[in-house]
Length: 370
Image (cartoon, rainbow, N blue to C red; front, side):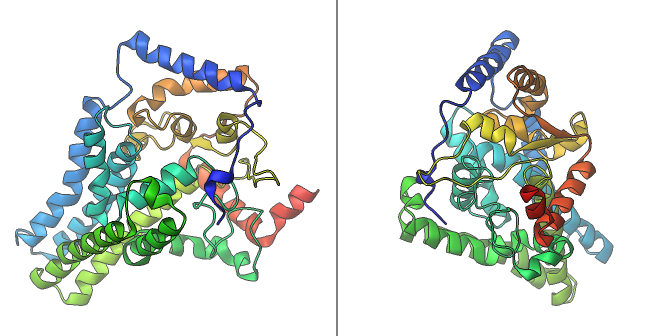
């Protein structure tokens, strides 16, 4: 992958659009007399999601839950809690959107370590590479997976013809891959590229943290349940894997349904290391919303159905996205900037899988060439 610092956006491409949009959004918070950070609703959600993950685990480890059906239910609840922590709590915190106090953000951002991840690697991949260079070939790690084709600029291999069928399996394995391999691979890679240093970390310190937190996670979440629960060891392992698979599938579906779609654009840098649009216009061309107005769904997935607003204002807590979305949409229309949206989550998901099929079979390449 190329060094991300080589990407330059076109500052002459409608700079007044984002200037005016930012002014209007800031005015919204001034007029309402509210902060852009978390409110009581977000605090309640934080307690709820963390509890949804920790309490079932405590009930199992303490021996309170003994029946097989109840144990399976506990793992299912943990999967929901795991997803909620990823969508809402650690996501906002690692963007610095939870609180104006960096220590609060750091503490809540580290909650990802409770579910098997590593917060520093997540910040680098998501905040630095994905948010800065959305859908840019060889710079956005979310579309440079190698085993699937998410961009027309990637080489098309024969196996990709079937990616629409094996995608759900790989998506479900996402958090397991984070746990056993990805964080180790990324720590080495980010060290070589100087991205760990930019976070104020040495390679030794980062790798030590990764190893120790992974060991602690496996002991608490897998080894102890195998030793304590009244199930055969492989049954507990199966429950553990099912928890991860359901969480990984849900996370992937939500995030992929915002960027790899039929209407979104894909870019690669030119000879001078530039892309054609300004950063704000680029975000709107590569991102889409879905299921706006579905309040409970939006609440559970951390407002990530408002991906356009999130990519333009990642430092604003997601609880405010439904309120600023009309401002963003109206301003985009006024300046002739695209604002992509799908009426439902399933419509976005259908578009994503249609795009996977087109990319895998080469139909999208032929469409571009026509």
